[in-house]
Length: 362
Image 1 (cartoon, rainbow, N blue to C red):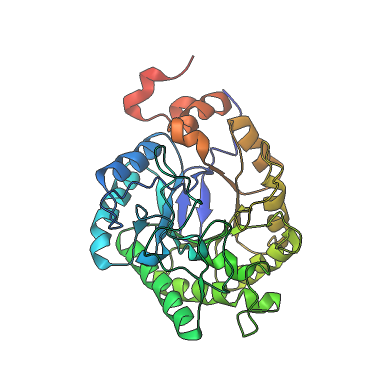
Image 2: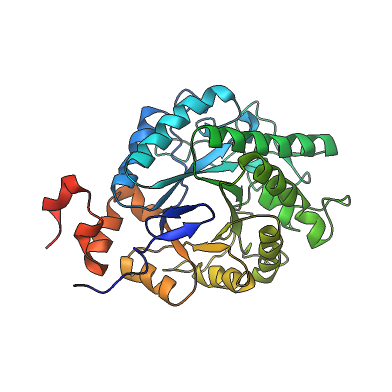
């Protein structure tokens, strides 16, 4: 018998339990080919296969709360009740294979309206698509993209409500987890960073004011989703002088937990082009900082960042850097990575789908 694996142990989240501590990180696939935000059969197959592959929690890619909030025209969306049905089909496929299903709701802010980051398209940040109106906390452009308009108070109110309504639709579609996208240089992150937010009203200036937009969204989403799991993804550092750093993110994390957030998904960067020390597990120390900051609560912390083996993921957990591990790029080409990792770390037949037991690796 192989020893028990922490990675493949059940994990409680608020009122539900994931079968293991492996998350599929939300990664845009730019596959809403009709440009209407609807999930397609391709999305159902893509996410369903990762559920068969053994992930415990699957978070569907960035899903826009409004049409103008899409990163590209081919992004998923939950800005319309008519989009619920297609999402429900996807969620049922994930649930049928034993995984929890979440969705990341998002608004791209000044980084909206770009080309899909797919082979054969122009580079995503070579320009804003014609006819796309960008909004942001301040009229400061992301390099290579159009200058955004500054959001006024009424528009901010409308966006808070848009996040709440998207979350309501996600719950109607059956999701277990709603993740608010506050990372990677998109709208919420733009409010949080002093490099992109130079407002002088209640949404700018002090650190507390800069997180006000996010706190309002969290409160509205929590009200909309009831007892479902609420997660926020954060960029813990901008990797740029004068921007967000880990200490500021830890303070934000504490505030979020006080407002009912159950899970903090810790990433980094994306606000501006930066020199990032990318390497295996390079963001795990940031997750560890956040975990220490919220250690007195029930909140869970998800670590991510070039984690490419089960042993690496297991070490992140047993050393206390995080409570769960999110896998991204590895899962794009290997939807069954969790099954392979389980074979090395635990008894593979305990996680292998019954239909696949003859394929257990020697």
